Length: 214
Image (cartoon, rainbow, N blue to C red; front, top):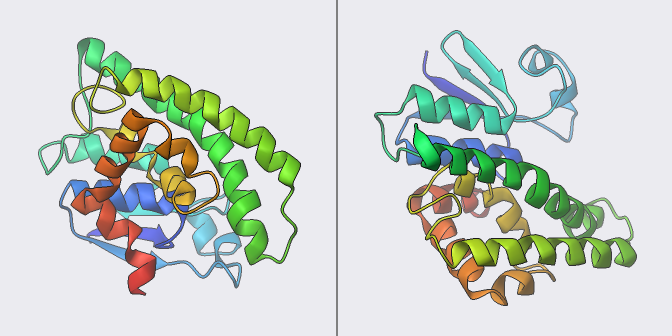
């Protein structure tokens, strides 16, 4: 039956799943969900994700939602394909678990709020809340200070190999690039090098450029 991804090529969470599939060198079919018509809030999509959010994945009889859960499934199920993306034991596994949590609970919530203010509000004709931008820019700077210290010791955020902890940052980094908060990356040399490194990976670039190719 093959792997099917129900999502949008430019959508943040979909980027994670598509990049993971590319890193694993797996064939898949992207079924674009018409968000403007509200297809994600209707059947049959709700049978894949009852919360009505993209992406969702089908792999034979397996049906999954939540992008980080999907990337874990891809990494473990297809561990012998492409880039490993995970550590399976010891301190390396523990570090991976820690930094995956950091991305989900420290980095992404702040970047998502900035993306709403700096990207999505304009798309909906809404006014940017400059006070909110300032507040979340300050918060993100503190998070990236921690990243800078970490990346001064390791090539990637969870160690010396590229893993899901790095890959899961791709949507947030995409939002930051070219925005008024890109300077937060540029001002931190280790963060800047890490960002450029992971975004330039062929598997990442293929996904990040999808909307430009449409």
